[in-house]
Image (cartoon, rainbow, N blue to C red; front, side, top):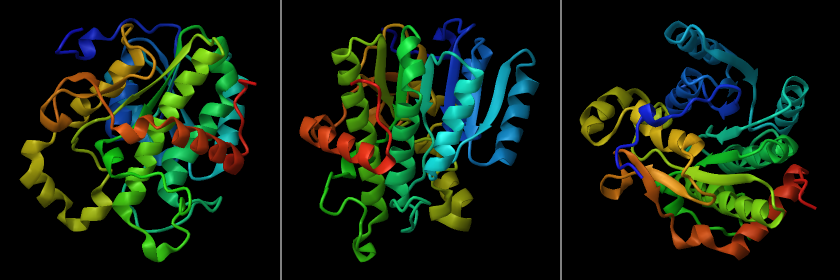
Length: 307
């Protein structure tokens, strides 16, 4: 495989349908733009419709013949997830690639509409429910993919099922909660791929991470310091377009196999062209993956159609 995989390697995507969550900015926007450029019908799934409209306008201006649509999706609200899935299935009879990209990072302790700790609720439970609700389309679309965007932050995670939601908010750690959600993304990725194989479904589940990319994801942590800090550390970061490459490659490279994980090839996977990388041992814990899947089904009330 090429060590310098870029958007020039993206194949023709005409007649394919892609969903990208959190596509109004950052790596989600960059990925969606490249899918649209290559002919895919691309759905910008976004909580903030005003930002999504601006993103849509940018794509249409740069790629006038693109086929791009906005649909509202709030992953922190299961009612919104259910509504999105229903509306999508009314319009489309196939889904080639679902990119579970949206997320929040190291926010203060808060709960989602459904009572979940917000980072695990948004980053994992929302995407688990969305994927399950769209499973029937993925199953009948030949060669479909689910791409979950994780992070090097998964290395800070730990599946403590006795205090999974930080029920005692005094024990809450922004970093640990974020790490837990990113570890959950990987446990879900590998478990979903195993289930695809067991059910003989012609689909794969893969993961990606952007390394250190200059996006707005953590701006709330830095406040008015954000421009200063980004200026100081900009040398160590790559732009959103480069940071999106692992996600794009995971989504479209015909050589990608199920359960693979892509990230930047540079030192500590901080920056560089996308290559296959390895996640930590905890992300491959099959017992934790089983517990997480069962808990996710119970809390979201969403079951996949494997049985």
